[in-house]
Image (cartoon, rainbow, N blue to C red; front, side, top):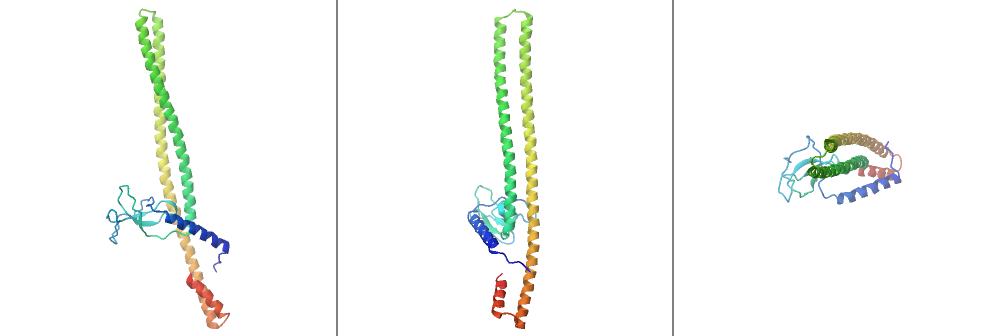
Length: 261
């Protein structure tokens, strides 16, 4: 037999549903979507169109917040004007599943925030290296000018002085080359890191959809079990009424409660 929820559990669920309803009232924009071959393309079952564009509506699967995995019909035009959801195909998910989705999305955003912060720190370091490289280039140019003037002024000086100056120039060229190579390596590493992050994001999306579908199946199994228990209780109540057992008024009230549910 199913256990009746106590007053505290009922109060918590009512409070959560109230908050969720208020969120839905503010949810005017079309959610992010994910490609699902089983539900995509234009709507062919009806002539449903969005009013601003007069275009035939499309099929989408939401990939945002507590609506993740819900199918809906929406506008297919991509011109910056958000026509909102025209019609939800799936009803809102149960409260328990919504809480799970909220937790998963919080974990996903928290992980992405760390990646963004690492990327920003790396970009600052690359920018610093570029500035140092530019400064070194200016110093090199200035040194070349100074050396040229020195050659013009001290023409005929000893050969070892010329060798010293030439060595200094070669050292500066080598240092500049090393900094350029370091900057190239840093930029290449950043590109590789971004590709890896994109793969991680795609994997996270696939995991969320898989977990959502698994949770939906488990909830459906629980619903079926509750329906079977309800049918058994209804048969027992009907049998008691026919046999004349118990208080008929109380049994009728219990039956009315089951009929309402």
